[in-house]
Length: 162
Image (cartoon, rainbow, N blue to C red):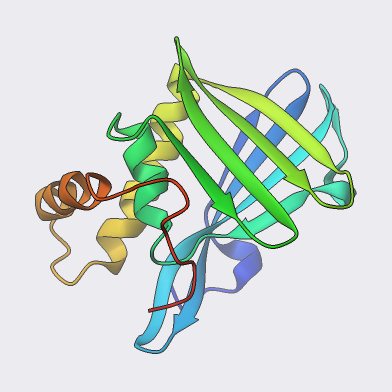
């Protein structure tokens, strides 16, 4: 995948009535090399006219990517990916995940993620985690996710690489 142009990387598009989310397979550089991860783009707007020019974008660190999979697997009740100027929060609710994004400049977007879309987003994150794992073994990645998500306390994840 590292030889694939970024425009051709796999993407997942999720649409709500008043917001949309795109998850894109990408890569991040850390002190130990290049690792697969996800860029999340969240946009406000009404169906079908989402304002992608005003989207809120975050690239998940190698420490955050397991949290995205963990919320989809039911291992975590919510996650908050924070940056100094923006953030994306995803929380479990009855029959859905709910995603909110905001930036200090006033941009905001939100959307429910249906059960089917939550499954697709979780599988997307898991595929990237398996691809970037040392073993390439999905069962080992799942076991590691259960253990690592048990360590999570909101606000405790240092987004710095490594």
